[in-house]
Length: 577
Ligand SMILES: Cc1ncc(C[n+]2csc(CCOP(=O)(O)OP(=O)(O)O)c2C)c(N)n1
Ligand SMILES: [Mg+2]
Image (cartoon, rainbow, N blue to C red; front, top):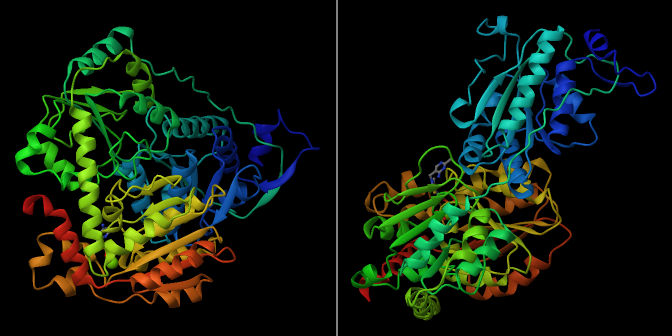
């Protein structure tokens, strides 16, 4: 057996154990472990049998088996995002791999390290009508940092080459900027064969990563620009929770010339920050926008959620715009970029904040005063609104218990969440890398599998219906809860300009097909709750959050036409004030 020859140096009959006889697969698993992969999501197949066996027998890597590869990949995305660690995925040949694509694209734009491992037929059998075979090499190329194709042969040179490629893949996935990678593994022969083998100890190529620091000259240059400006805005979009960044930005927000705006998935909280960007922007008249516009804009984080802030900053262009991030290409969302800071945001602000000095500016005070006015207006609109999504969110979000991890789906859920401050939640997430509605439930479920917190997903009825495969995995625990906003389909289309004016709105956009939410709950062992009025919701929320025997689903039914009218008038109120 080839592996015996190669590993003879290490072979010890005392520690020998049965494992797949495919050395490449065992070494791939050993390297994943050495590089810090602690979780893998496996999907069944026969071509990938050696990989399934090798991962399942490595007790130091937690494995989960999920049949639907689309769901599996989103689960891995949720795990990797929440844990901050790379997560591996293993599938068989053929379309299995293509089903990973949506989550891999999301991971790519969110800089999440997924290690995609696909089994393939040996090269000579591609395109030969020999079943379950497609052209897999590089098929995820547009959404991974790099694609690797391992050698078919098992001579010493080929094994060295395979190890080198796997080491390269595992390093690329996490440095310098995390991203998914794809390793394609051609396998032929007796796929299910197991044999006594010695433990594999392939060399793990270590990386020494230098600490990211600005030179003193650069730090002084940046700090003096902030110290001289009268109006500095720091806009933080999607970021993972970071106590260091939080502390540095809290110190920055003490400067009177600096306002820190945080989106709901920025995961930063401080009394001095403005956490409800859209709420405040709707309370600023067009005539006042020049005063509120920054001279120096600093942006960090992923794709912005708020359309209003994008419109505002694109129209009232700052003289200077710095973007903080380690991406290799220019990202100029606000069409005003003047400087890139390719450094981790926490290190940047930790270094420059102590060097910044206050000016006599009134800029931060102006924003916080407007926030007070905006909050009063917001409360009035909510109080006066009839039963609708806005009212439901106004009751639901403050009722979320302290320490819950919140997940939001796309559609209007993330937009409503932007209108409220939820400082009590431990963290907030949404698939905003590419804003798909295809894997919200699976991603939230994956995140719930890596810690002991309660995880709450607030999702739309269409998004929920799209991803019911997540419920079928049987992996939900009583710590996993879902609120489905049952608003008659794609409510966002009734709200946004364009589709809402078309006669096809109901048939082709909104798709007013009621999801059998209760049926799904019963089928998959979730306790079901329902509310279709303010009073019902107030009654049911404590029971829903207290439920700890089963995972739970709460469906909140609201009228689609009222939802759109209320939200539209909320967003437009600046123009009517
Ligand atoms: C994979 C994918 N397909 C289509 C879309 C386009 N899309 C965006 S929101 C949406 C409707 C979402 O409806 P729902 O989940 O009920 O949320 P609501 O708008 O009602 O809040 C659709 C189809 C998308 N974002 N992703
Ligand atoms: Mg909906």
